[in-house]
Length: 315
Image 1 (cartoon, rainbow, N blue to C red):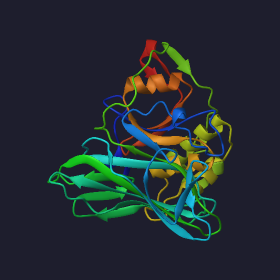
Image 2: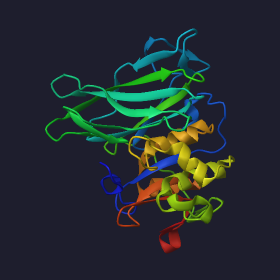
Image 3: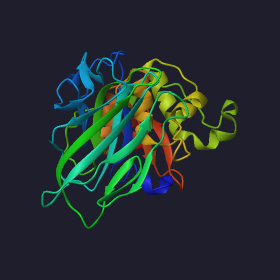
Image 4: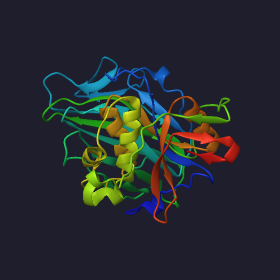
């Protein structure tokens, strides 16, 4: 899975693979599950109410962090049922403070055995450190930001997630982990929404001169930077691209890293699979959505800011 084509879900056909970024949330990453109300085919697990086993980690202020005096630690959740699935994307919100985090998932197979651990790589706010995982395992393949179960296996829906924390320049603090699968039962009901809505997002072009030679390949960072600016925190598209860069994949379009970047800025952001109605409802609630589309042959990331029912259009 080394190109966009294999990772695209067409917006106007079935589902929008979206990074939802939420306004008016605490910037200290205070965990509050009530703030996240628009999970659709995803579940967000806040450490205020997620049980598991700690090895060098503790819950402090509702967040997962390292115990005093240690430089690395691991948290493993208890078994969670998300419904049987074929593929999955994980995302998280953290303040790494120059440290590192690594998110892993294992799943139960029909018959009762468990897979090995599949990693979403290493994330850090320090440039040059973040990198995805690319693994062809026994039961699944892990490519960039998506775990795909091999066709010869079926899942029970039971999973565990593991968070590894490493202190380097500072101590990482994690507020939540989100698991999304398009097969997951809907977690929210689409509410009513008006026929037209537009969130006031400052426009940008990824190919603006200040972005130089990489302008043509930074649609995801530009989308993320616009979303974060809409929330109230300005960052240039170029600096966002460097902060989101996947040093293993060698590209800027890692979806999990997009959500993680917004989390570093103090916002709640996660990956979900939205249909058209849910996308419109979320937009009407003031949320903006970074969405994976087939607007170009190789795929293109855009920021959905509104919609116009009369003309059957997203904006």
